[in-house]
Structure formats: structure tokens, C-alpha cells
Image (cartoon, rainbow, N blue to C red; front, top):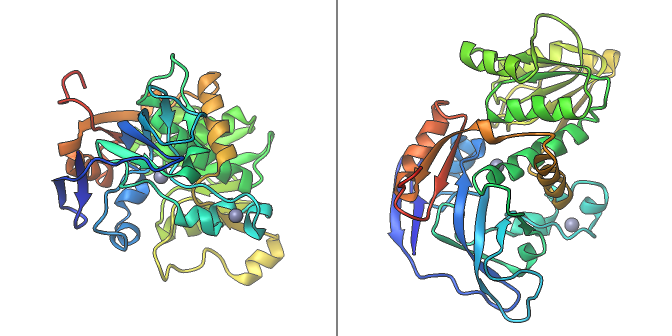
Length: 329
Ligand SMILES: [Zn+2]
Ligand SMILES: [Zn+2]
């Protein structure tokens, strides 16, 4: 089979590797589509992993089932989550399942930008089978939306609150939609690019001036944007870091300000199984429609271009489609 292996940040090689074979309890899926995540193009974050087959937002169809498995069947279309928590350790029990050691050690083999993936037994339990009506491209948005839902939970965002979303890329727009679904009273947005600001307004956010907010969700790693978001917090407010700030970034506010205003600062990484199910459900019941966010569909040999479109901010969401020759995309 073919895989798209990122060798450096810019160079992606299409390689021929052996087809994966499922061990007992495992499955192999043909990858139908796999989204490019912002983390795939966050240079300092991803360069530590290279060389690697990136891609952790895949949907697939089950093409081989290992011995002893009867929970999934050949032909099932599935959303494949790339990590699985143990559900029992101290971190899992305290709600930090994305910090669970098993969560961190599980992963797709070789990665979503490949014709096929092997899904380990740990991950098979987390497969979400797609109903007929749901498009495999749109279903790649389950994982990003799950991350958004988890971040809003971690920031204790409630109906009636006000929210500031900083950055109106794919994740920012998902935050706007998910907040509205949650009954947030008003969603403010900060975004430098006029066309994205207009899009955020179309999704139901208002352009932020100097209003104080209960929660600020920062979807950019820029230190000045994080600091500005912290300034916009009302007393008792919560700042949530949704994009990873680069190493050695300055803290968003000083201890005095934090104490006097009783501010909270939190962060959210990835998503757990419950978040994945909640995200799929909100797409299925029509509460959130992420379909318009997918602006680019590319073939596996075009993976480098998909990454570059995402890196340059030209794509809201680029999706790689490994099967076929790209006709009809
Ligand atoms: Zn991601
Ligand atoms: Zn655990």
C-alpha cells in the first residue's frame, strides 16, 4: 500500500510499504478520508515526531477483521480515534483521560495519510460505526469537534455565559457552533483576517470590542493574542488554551491579577471516547453541521499540498482522500 510519510516539515514522500495485517482483536481499514489538523502544521510540535505518517482524523471502511472480534464487521464505515484511555487510572478518574499513559502510548499504524491503517485492539473498542446517511468526509470532523466539546467542558462553559473565541479558523468556527449549541448567551470573536471574521459572524459570533467575558477560548498560539484574551476576562473568568503555545512563551497574566480577579487558566488537549460520541451525536442530530468547513479535498500524493494549504491558512480544513485517483473530488 501507499503511505505519505512526512520526512521534514515541507517534504512528504509517497512510499510503498507492506499491507497491514490484523492480529487477533484488531482490524484493518481502508482510509476513506483523513483531515489535516492544526497540530500537523504546528512546526515546533510536529517536528519532534518526524519522520512520520501523520493524520489522526480518519474515517475508514473495515476490510479485514482479526480473530475473535465480533463487534465490528467487514464493510462497516467507521470513525477511528487515534488514542484510547484506560478509564481506570488516577488521571482518567480525575477527568484527564487524554493524559492517561495508555492514551499517550496508543496510536494508529502507520497514520491516517495512508491507504490503510491497522487499528490496535485498544482502539477497536473506540470505533464509531457510521450510519448510512453520514458522509465519510464530514465524519472526519468528529475528532476536531470532540476536542472542541472537551475544551468547553474543561473551561466550564455553561448556558448563559459569554464566550470570546480568538481565531476563526476551523477550530474557532467549531467553538462558535458548539457554544451556540450549548446555549451560550453571546459569542464574541477576534480574528485578524476580514474574510474569516465575516465567516465567524455568519456562524453566529459578534466582533469583539472591549467587552468582558466569562470564558476566553484561544485558538492561536500567539503570545500577544493569549495576553489580549486574558485582559478580556471578567472577574472570575476562565482562559482556556486550545492551541499549544510554543515552548518558553510568556505566561498570559501575572499572579497579582490572577489573584485579585480570581481568574482560572486551563488547557485542553485532544478528546476522550465520550467526547467523540457526543461530537458524532451532535452532527447526526443536526445540532452542529461541520460540512462547510471542509474547503479542500486532495489525493494521497497531494498530502504535501494539503499540509501546506493548512499551514498557510488557505484551507479552513483540508482532507486527504487516499482511495482512488481523485476523480470526482
Ligand atoms: Zn487533531
Ligand atoms: Zn487511564
